[in-house]
Length: 579
Image (cartoon, rainbow, N blue to C red):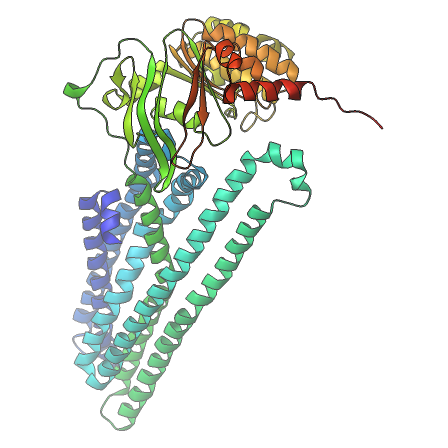
């Protein structure tokens, strides 16, 4: 855990803080140890009472000063190094990761890392580390002090300390197992909840929300069961730890009384040892509680490091960068798979010429959306090359590819702010006049006029206060604002009604003018307007190009595209008849 912590937090500062807390624990132990001779001198009215009192006061004041400095420095680390710098570090790293890295589970992990895990780690330096230092160091000092008074009592304490250490190790291992189990269940539940939120349109359309969604319910029940099991696993060793600590204190009391009865130990010395020994129980009891907190911190550090260890796609060196001559997109003999042994594309070659619209057509699972994402370099290909303007995308900086590309997908996400600010995400420096022009070209101006506060209307989380067609118009208006030369469209009209489909199809035709456009579509009306069609057919070793050419030419010759056109035409003639 310590090594993982030093990777995330200022290592030099953490070592200094640890040194301050160790010094504080040693001083606490020494101050308590001095209480034995002080109390003896006090009850005996010894002439050395003033010297012992002065020593206790000096060490006590020094302990308070050192502990205060340690706590203030630990608070500074908690606030600035964890709650501030660590969130920034995670955010900056996530921004550098390829878009293909993100899925429901990882999105949930990022949310947990910047909220739950950061909150857990903020307690590490100010609570866990000082408590553990006190729990291990103060008792050792006290054992040494007791040995100077009566070694049999120190022996009982030393044996107890060894047993408690073994129990604590077992307790830590049990806590680690329980926390890992709880964390896996919590991550699975969080991922299912993200999916549940995303799938609301489908779930509501199918009526699944009436009885709940079984995968989400099962994940939540598993999370609850994991939490209860974890509490049972962690509870038993913790109870054993506290029972042994209290039993040891009782044994020291009994042994001390026996020594007093045998006149080996004076009553004042016995009382002094009991006072000091009772002070050991508090740090030991805290150690039992901090075991769980320490492992929570370990789990949090593991989660943080798993995000920070995710590798961004390699960026080309400054002297190895290529220059894109235009915006034509080409795939040359590309093979790709998301997981080992599950190929998606197999030696696919195609091109999307500059200034033309290329439609990707084929059944579900044929890799159409994957091709769009490879063109935008969400991932790197397993074999072959993807080029933009003749330059391999791996030799182009990611920022340059993103600047050249506008993407409009079927599932549009809007931030819970105004329409104006949602458009400015595409180009923060855009003026109000430019936003209004983009809105007019995207036919969004009519939507804005109908909203209660016009441009300043908040769209709600994810844009849920707008309809699907309205969200699509906002997304297309973003593309107009960005004005990028490459346009990637993925099923943007498949879930819309006829009126919205017709309106958005017309807008996309205007947006496509003069740009390199790749569009994934199932609607025949969209496909027939393309300059070229590439029909992809899935196969066991990955999808391949089955046909390519102008829509009219492919529709006239036998093949899968003509079958697709005939099936689409036949479906459009379907009618529902009443008996």
